[in-house]
Length: 325
Ligand code: PEP
Ligand code: MG
Image (cartoon, rainbow, N blue to C red; front, side, top):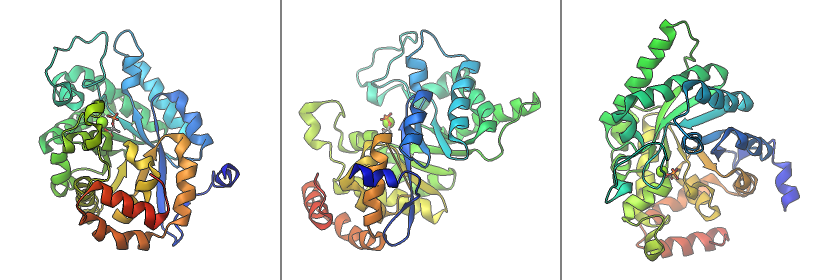
């Protein structure tokens, strides 16, 4: 089986009925790029930049960040690299950033909220990203967006720093895509409005499931409620993808669900354009995709969206596609 997968390494991901989907990989550091290329991923769908900050004693400088981003972009060549701006707070802390203790850190001061408040810190990262954009195919993605105003404010800062750099004579790519993560239910519900403003969405199911089900993703006591296949989640995904496509925008997924075998047929049927997973899952997923018919998967979407429970969905998908959960 592994030998079969290896043959797919340099292939595009095509379904049995000839549709292309993009299989991308998630990375945490520039060192992970080797695994991405070795496993034949078509892009980097999520570069979690917080590790650059978490692995340091103090805030990484603009030059340090530029070097890291440039390394990844250059190594990926003409393949797309989606870099997510700082997603700190919640479960991720920085030893050198004194954040107030919060009752509900996952509902608190984190990610884009912190970046839009401490704009010096954010501007430094944006400048590093913009400078690196000249070396590859960059897409910038903002985490934990809850409102349209936040997206506009983040994008405005990006454009401001772009103008500043250009005035300084620095080369910046003119084709940077600017998108956002969909991990707060409000944004999934408001996908129609957001779709007018973004270049793309990437669904962060790890957080989207936690917030939709109000079940802490780390708490074993409530893990039974952490249900990727709950029809509530699937209906939110359907809304995001439908509205994005109406506006001509693409949708990726970079949460764990994108790499789950049982989820692939339904995500394909929903029309997901890009699946970003751990590099080691890419070839297995590509192999499964080559056996799936997109039209067949589309035909079962309505049925699944109308089901009552996650269990019903899981049973149906595993028997229909002969995949174990
Ligand atoms: C997510 O929430 O699904 C996601 C990809 O982000 P993280 O796991 O880093 O919170
Ligand atoms: Mg998240």
